[in-house]
Length: 434
Ligand SMILES: Cc1ncc(COP(=O)(O)O)c(C=O)c1O
Image (tube, rainbow, N blue to C red; front, side, top):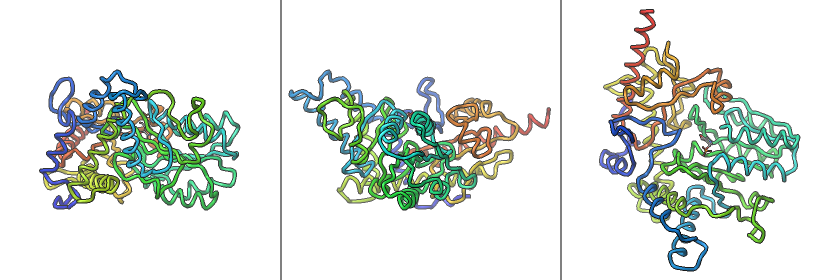
């Protein structure tokens, strides 16, 4: 049971203000019926302001590379968005490259690095999202390089540092590794991985997929100076339609698709929508606004870090409630018929994602039953290309993934627990009667 006086939780007043900023926070977009949305790892709650700013600026017919006033205004919106992306990454010197999706970013950057950097092997992990794993495999096949895959750890739900570093040698062309898993929620120790990997090969190129972790924790290119990191705004309180990558200066200078005459480190190809940059600025402003509730600092990165730290603290308490329950309801760990998978005890090493199974209940059927109770969760099953390798690495065939967000309340998590208890009891009763 969780002691809810913990300082990690947002106050009721702040929670109210936070929830007001998100669209469909407690209702179904179509039926308008009350619902609980716990599939934020598939696409998160959206900030109303991000959607509003997107549509405000997407109305402009003007091209940002013209001289008239409205065009210059759009160019400023784009520049501000790029500055705000730098705040997210704490990346002052490298290049920012927008894509249509985060997967496109990883494929493109993996290609550029592996085609231009010497080395006979590429190192990755079993836990990668297919965008990173399949791009590593694609270029390993294309270029005749060996693909080395680090094993997962079923206790932590992550990948141990040594499992990765033991695969790296002088001939490693690229290490591509996920920051946190969208299946288990495990946060990898990227700082140590980068440090230890570069002890083996000091100039090793490294890509980190931050799509899962960016909305839940601080990322910092100065602490983890890698060659590329990405995030997807639609999983980060923002909107669909773009993926963003940060490239180190040396990676940005490698030969890449570019229009003749553009500067070496410019990866922008064509005319991305300034509106996307405006929407990303809203994400950063929002996190800074949370930071400003706890700090008088004026520096944007400091406020952003404080905001993200508070988000992580609130989410950790929600995770504790989810697992251990409250005075009112049992936690997932204690509901009969429910198994929590990859349930590592150190919650500071986990993003707010939980994988469960319910006895005698097929994953899809479980998700349908949750939906009948107006709760949205998602099944991760080994028949899906998006889950197969990761689940099998843990010896699992599937799970029900529950992924709330910091704008969820303790009361909502309690409701989810009540629904889970009901579904589990029903499933036990059905199996007894069969
Ligand atoms: C960890 C991780 N990496 C990459 C991606 C790919 O993002 P996108 O859908 O923008 O290509 C996802 C999406 O599910 C993800 O969860």
